[in-house]
Amino acid sequence: MHILIVGAGLAGVCSAWYLRTAGHTVTIIEREEAPALETSFANGGQISISHPEPWSNPAAPMTILRWLGRKDAPLLFRWPAEAARIHWGLQFLRECLPARTHRNTLAIAHLAAYSGNCLRALREANGLQYDSLSRGVLHLYFAKENYRHGETQQKVLQGLGIGARMLTPSECVDTEPSLARMETQLVGGMLGTEDESGNAQRFATELAKRCAEAGVEFLFNAHVERIVSIDNRISGVEIRQHGQHEILAADAYVVTAGSYSAPLVRPLGERLPIYPVKGYSATLQLTEPSKAPTVSLTDESRRIVCSRFGDQLRVAGTAELNGYNTELDPERCAALLNWVDTFFPNSYDPQEPHFWAGLRPTTPSNLPIIGHSRFGNLYYNTGHGTLGWTLACGSAQALADIVSGKKPQVEYPFQ
Ligand SMILES: Cc1cc2nc3c(=O)[nH]c(=O)nc-3n(C[C@H](O)[C@H](O)[C@H](O)COP(=O)(O)OP(=O)(O)OC[C@H]3O[C@@H](n4cnc5c(N)ncnc54)[C@H](O)[C@@H]3O)c2cc1C
Image (cartoon, rainbow, N blue to C red; front, side, top):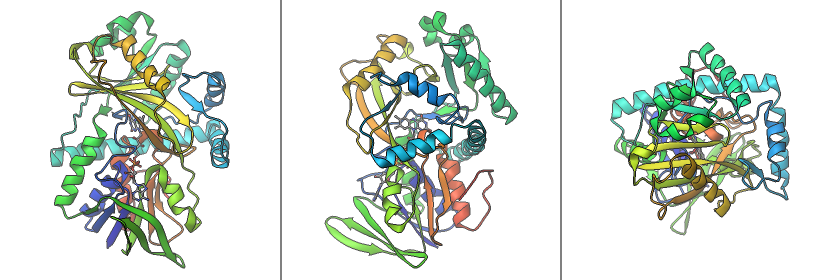
């Protein structure tokens, strides 16, 4: 089959790889000049199998209320809100019910564990280099209630066969010595032993090269303006490239357009519950690498993560519901640097922070949408929210199975 993919972020490039490996002819259309220049560009770098619990959980409504009005709050709901945001917010609240959170957590955990295996196999088979480190993700708890919640999560993970162990403050420092100055403030930690970290953009760029070598066609600087349907099938996509309009046709179509997936398919009558949730990162050049961590960290109180890429440190966090706006708010950028200054002072060059903001394509449940649409030859692999790097390989392998008429090898509510 000839398959057209819309969007060359992590989801698109991985889909191209697994579809090509399954024997399909693949063309991938991307409006930017290279892969992974939008949300997949500068994320937190974590392959966080040990964090399947979605943002929408029973504790979320109270936590969000506590944060209201705080400019440095990890989650910011900017007003006035448009109808789409209010609608999404109500769906989010429904997903906070305990039974739904439980179901969503299990689904994400299964997909994340499967995805971790797919990533390792892909990396080893192809020798992909992307500053990957297999040293786990260390979750840090600075409040007793967060630690107790971590213990509950660890039991859930253990029950699913996912490696995670609780650590005392001194064990946290043994695991990551650069945390020494924070030891007295720590209540404890949890180490996700199967977790990893790595530069997602570098990974996507490397994998795109392998895709091209394997025969995948990339059309860059090509904007998909609309998807054309006849009855219950897609007949083509209209693209604009170098000022020219053209209709491209294939046997099947896969939408991997991140936060833009929902507006792209809306004219077809498809309603994808994806909202762009903005996050920030800062990439810092290390001047004293020994003062900075190599184990990827998640600060569970401040909702900040960091990962080490060679002699750089990436720190990321915050969630802002503010439409498709990617402007940098100086206060949010400063909050990231303050965090590094508190944890790892004098470790980086303060003259050269590289700030970035991206839009997480987020569903109310944080479950990505993978599989069929209402149209016989249109498929989705989108809506990966906070975990698009963690879930990239497994989601794409499953999508390739579905398109090829096979049953995916992972338990998940596919469409
Ligand atoms: C601050 C931050 C930190 C994060 N940290 C982590 C982390 O540590 N671990 C983790 O697992 N996940 C993390 N994520 C989430 C992860 O980065 C995303 O889920 C993932 O990058 C989404 O990938 P995607 O391919 O779906 O979207 P994108 O990367 O946005 O790709 C979509 C592509 O489609 C293209 N496109 C869109 N519309 C069109 C069109 N009409 N025509 C042509 N091309 C089009 C875009 O140009 C883009 O390249 C983080 C996200 C943020 C913002």
